[in-house]
Amino acid sequence: TAMSEKILNCLYIILSIHFTFIVEAGTGELLKSKGYQVFPIQDLSIIKHNQKFITSLDREKNDCDLLVSGTFFDGSLTPVGPFMEDRRISIVNPKTLSRGFVAIMQDGSVILSSMSYTNYDYRNSTHRTEMSKRFFTHLEKLENKTEKTVTHLMGGGAHLIMTNTNNRGYAASVKSIEEKQFFDQGIGNLDSAQMRRTNHIAIITIEEKSYAVITPKVSGRTMQKDFLQAKVKSAIKFDGGSGCSAFLKGSEENICPTKGANPSGFCINF
Image (cartoon, rainbow, N blue to C red):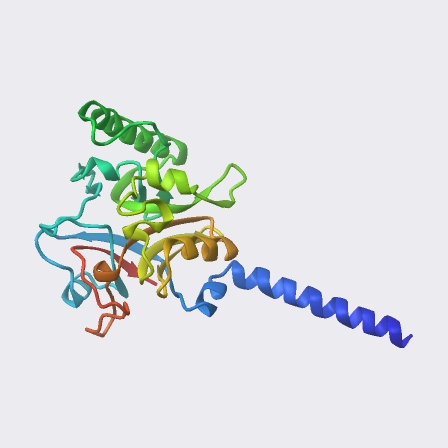
């Protein structure tokens, strides 16, 4: 009947919209529709300078399709880390040990992780020693679990989306971001100075694939909500605002809207 056909057509439209949302949410298209610049990662390497910023020349030198800025840095233009270069680890600020990191394994695969939260306070010297021990233990467990060796690592980012035992993403709690990851400048947590409404760089995973993201001018709170809606399994936010820079192959233009600068970066090939 005509009524039955109308009902079937309505069901078809509803299912089509639902299916389209799932596809878009799982491929980064949903983020693009909200103004995020999303770049697939085929190969990833890490660049770190002290006392100088990365530039388009570093992109050319390292033959990157895209070079985006990395972790936060201090007044002497030293990335706060932790960093691993060719299996050698440097830790500039113990405060960053319980934050998110991007690890590059010996086979070139990329893993986003952070050590299990503790009640340690980085301002306490004894606690700093214990935090370092736990960090190295976490890396050892990661290598044992994956049966792969970590060769390079950049840490210090805000682990906004974590992966649960069902391999799905969930939002890191406001309390953990302030009290465990120590994003505590100003108000603290998702409203801290490091989470302000501006352009940020993030490394994310969707459906086992890694992407580099340049956000529109959003806060950490909005970013976390958008990532969850886009079915992101894990997301680590690195520097933004005056620390946000990005250079595409064949161009000297900084495509990060805030035109910032940073002494560390991710070299990405598509």
